[in-house]
Amino acid sequence: MKTQNNHDLRACGTLVKRNVSMYFKDKGTFFTSLITPIILLVLYATFLYNVYEDTFSAQLPEGLVDDSLIQGLVGGVLLSSLLAVSTVTVPFCANLFMVQDKVTGARGDLSIAPVKPSSLAFGYYIATVINGLIISFVALAMGLVYLSFIGWYLSFTDVLLLISDVVLLVLFGTALSSLICYPLRSQGAMSAVGTIVSSGYGFICGAYMPISSFGKALQNTLIFLPGTHGTSLIRNHALNGVFEEMLAENVPQQAVDGLRAAADCRLSFFGNTVEQWVMYLVLAGSILLMLSAFVIIMVLAERKNRK
Image (tube, rainbow, N blue to C red; front, side, top):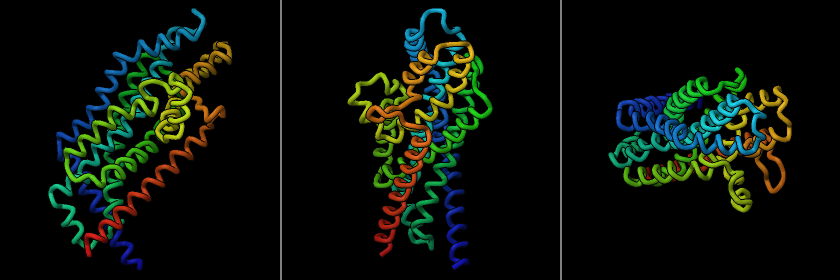
């Protein structure tokens, strides 16, 4: 039994190395994944900065808060939006090789090999997580550099929490993309799904526009989506330092609470405030649920194909 387990682990490790290597060898896919966060950062800074600045400034009496704090607030929102979208959309690009193996026939060769279907599933999943983390950490680094220029209020703890958020959301994005993309059998279908996710996910998770700006009915619907909770976690950790500095400068607690709500740092579930530990629980539960579903579906499909 121990020998078999070691063989399965080695097989899974080999598959991970193969899939990661293929991802970096395909320059087109790699640079497309890498440039996506850069484009998003430029678009956010160009088109959304003034929108958020006017929105937050309008909620405060003139002269109550320094411009540097407003800039730090807007910068934190843009950084959290960038990470909330990139950590989910990049795994869809990185998961292209799972579909490509079907197109090229490599999946058939892997099915013949003495590799458990579960090892094959985890090989794809872990490789996509690694690829997604590399790109997402690049996006985080760019965002932190941007924040250092317009207004840095992050503590060391905030940065560590942002890193943990990135890891958690990449795990979520990989589980989601694996479950959605496994049935696809052409690169065209994969590209179409990636385009739909890239264009629509930012709206439904509150990255482009805060959930608080939507109607109550839509807010009560989107609160059930795990991505909404992921975005709120990143917002909390990206903006915590700004809000603490505001309170230190004697900005009224009520005004700070209003800004927290406007930035989706506080989510409401039918009138009840959602605590951060609940957000973590929702994300972790959704990751385990989708990953389990992906592995089960792949195991059943591979066993059927091998008969």
